[in-house]
Amino acid sequence: MITLQNFIGGKMCPPQRGRYLDNYEPAKGQIYGQLPDSDASDVEAAIAAAQKAAPAWGKLSTQERSRYLMKVSERIQERLEELAQAESRDNGKPVKLARSVDIPRARDNFAFFATAILHQEDAFHAMGEHGFNYTLRQPLGTVACISPWNLPLYLFTWKICPALAAGNAVVAKPSEVSPYTAYLLGEICQEVGFPAGVLNIVHGRGSKVGEALVKHTAIKAISFTGGTQTGARIAELAAPQFKKLSLELGGKNPNLIFADCDLERAISVSARASFANQGQICLCGSRILIEASIYEEFKKGFLEKVAQLTVGPPHQEEVQMGALVSAAHRDKVLQYIDLARQEGGTVLCGGHALPQPAPYDQGYYLAPTVIEDLPQACRTNSEEIFGPVVTLQPFSSEEEALAKANATEYGLAATVFTQDVNRAHRVAAHLQSGIVWINDWLVRDLRTPFGGMKNSGVGREGGFEALHFFTEAKNVCLTVS
Ligand code: NAD
Image 1 (cartoon, rainbow, N blue to C red):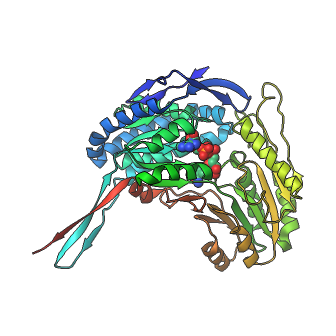
Image 2 (image 1 turned 90 degrees about the vertical axis):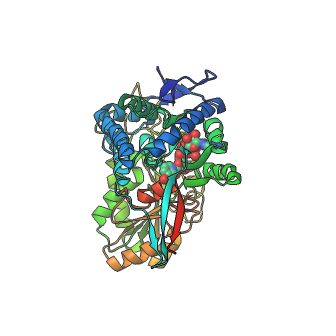
């Protein structure tokens, strides 16, 4: 049994009330560890440690802060294989994916923001011979970062790195469903001599730890990634204190396939965009909209591609889809498949659990599922499922494709497959989503703004936008008399 601890003031600390939650291994459906069931008293201790550390950290030169962050990045690289194995065990994702995407990205998040601050230019506004303005970007003090379970260390570090690089102390709460690599990050901070109290990690439930953090008057900004309903709750709690909020929420992303596309590419990228990480990426395309003239051809090729996907225990190197993250989440996805049937959908493949041989027979495996014959205006095509389930819908014109694509409350990401460059730009401009990929998916340049429109979020992460979020801008005006 692996027992995790909170990381507060540079030390591993048991939860003050001594309570723990079970941690499950999705591949086996068994408890394999425990994590602190922390509460407001642990949050209070973490905030006190952060408050103590924040002034000195904020006053370090950018070069010194950069060096500390680079040391963490380098140590993540040294422990990459161990972190990848831990992420896969904790989350159910294929170890190959954790090794090639999740952990390298956590390493790169540290390196990216460590070096971004070395290249940052501050604003200067001249007023001719009358004087000038310059903008100071000062750290906020102590901030909170709250992250979800689907890309555990990847998204956890995507938030804390800009917060730290901008000179803030952080109290961070990873998901209670996948806490292991955040715990290991605390160990890494100890190993590299990261200043005590600058990064604090408190484990536990959203309703206790998350809410205590959000409500605390010492927390000046909250960077949150998770579900839209949770985001609404956080906004409600934070609003009376006028805290800065960055909310990265759910999605129901359209994937538009035009008849003039490179069909082979559209099929293979769509299969990845549908089922990577078992469909548990906020950017996964869950509604595939296909021009009617190539609907049958796309469907045939796509189903052939999906049939080749290997589902199985995530530590096996050849596996492309591992286990879903929890029994509760697997059941939620299965309920959505039932709903799709009730709504008149035809399940073309999958639609059921996929039991594995012992000792994985209690694991949370689902077959990749493709459904057609559903109108846009139904729950299956409107609500976020966040699993290996996609629907196919035909369209007859660009206008109809756009209308269907934009017909949900979400607006996170979209993918467009066409070889007509004019169409690509036209459609991209009209899509109601914060991110559009043309003929590709999940290509990430960390300098670009990342986030969603409508109920997919508020604000943007990435590059200098993230660094700006974690600072207070102060204009200093000097006139020449
Ligand atoms: P969730 O909202 O249940 O939990 C996210 C985090 O918030 C967890 O750490 C949780 O403990 C905490 N939390 C829960 N209730 C809270 C509360 N009342 N106050 C404060 N914190 C609270 O989400 P999840 O199930 O972990 O993740 C899946 C969701 O995340 C999906 O909707 C997915 O689309 C979304 N997501 C969005 C992005 C993005 O960039 N937009 C990225 C990944 C995941």
